[in-house]
Image (tube, rainbow, N blue to C red):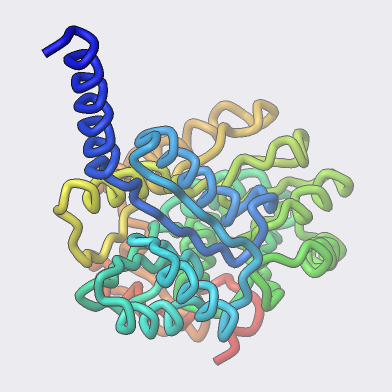
Length: 359
């Protein structure tokens, strides 16, 4: 065989082998994320998107992520989730409570796709749930608020009257009243996860009533900005909102999703994924406090940080008795602690909470 012929055959063989390699190369795992608000809210949806970006950084070309923002809860959510499943996404995270029914419905239609729903309770063979113990971060924040208030009036801007919100409001109130028995927490429902106009109006209304610490579980920075203008304290939501109120922000109750998302994507890639129910807090770094404002007294900072450390070490529970509800009824006797099952269905306010609790 001539030298040229041998070279040509070698080249063809190399080309063929290269082609086989390309055919056999694993396709990237397509991962979808569905957000109820814009990723520019600098709150809840922003933090989930930070988790998505962490997945991309951790896995490189092994994954391909897609996100859809500003998805209304209801029929639109079902359409978006189904479209992600139909276009080859094998792992889909739907990140709002109101996406629960839509996620469960689509999961039944696509049994080969793995779904994860945030803050809900419906599970299935290919549907997992996950949530952070948001109330844990509200407790040390409430201690700091109780120490700093001069009017004994604290405000809380909340989206919807679901157990997740009630737990956080109650933890905040219990903590504040543990250091200031006169403290009251005034609640305003804005009936939206993200509405800067409504959130700003709620903050301004609370401040007009004498509130000098404004907390929130709504997603925009508008309450922090309103507090900055009024010269009162604010507690941010989901991410560090210092940039929007450097003088006002006392701290922020941050939510960290990166570790969870990386773990779940890895589980799909290595074949160990299971439809688990995850509910973690400080101990797994799913919640975190932003740095306290340097203007607060060191003793206040130390007291709040001590409470955080105790919750993290499980030597202190935000819902340890005795706890009374607003009617004076003992809900948690001394020496007892609310169970997770009781926390998950919480539908009553503790002493010191002012405002309606719609059914």
